[in-house]
Image (cartoon, rainbow, N blue to C red):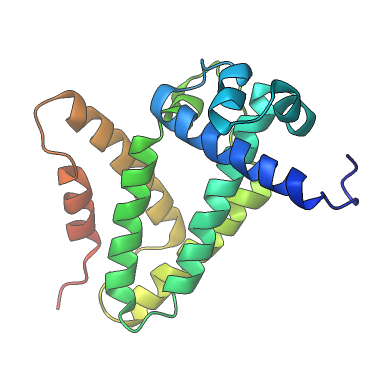
Length: 189
């Protein structure tokens, strides 16, 4: 398969099934699941998985890339919402919740010696550009503090993920740290 040659319809469907199964498996069980098991859950042969994704790392990168692209698309759509402040709050909450549910993503981002690379730079730039547009719309709306920039938001989001993981290990209710973050971001009238 060459990059400039489009996939046949059945190959596209199989690739999508593999990505969907892999996302579910990686999210629930982490990176230890063998490719053969992912193929079984996708309802395709192991050769199909290996043809599209020669290594588990390549499959994981494709899953994460697709997920980040979906988030970027969602943020872009929400930036034109009638109530951008509510859209920003909902998106930030969903992003934290989804990242917390994705064990493999957390594994890759937390493990110092992880064999899996994080998403490529273009994917990260895309999500942060879209999130920045959503942030600016919420600031113009008067919902989010205007002294927060995208660098602040990145650091705060990273902190929120760490705090939520820590809180879930203890006796704090899920989402409490995200609520505190959102309160800190809220513009005071």
